[in-house]
Image (cartoon, rainbow, N blue to C red; front, side):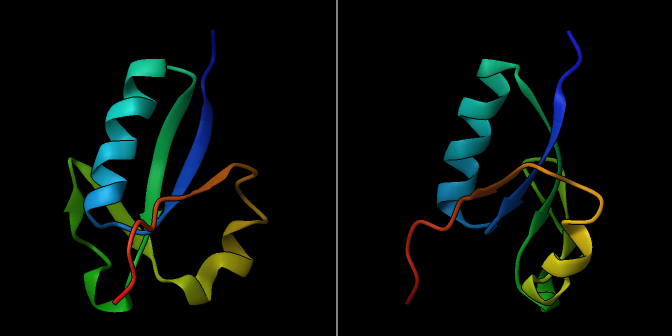
Length: 74
């Protein structure tokens, strides 16, 4: 069964918990994470932070599945 690509929005602690659940379900392939611009290029549990939120408009042209993984905002 082919897994659909998924982009996660938010790369903090809640994102890590969500990654565990997503991997276990084996329904989606995590294609990348959206986080702060200064974090682009870093990884969260091996998954790349590919863009900041100002690029969401471009990413929706390429991906159809997004999941908000922001658990707490200061």
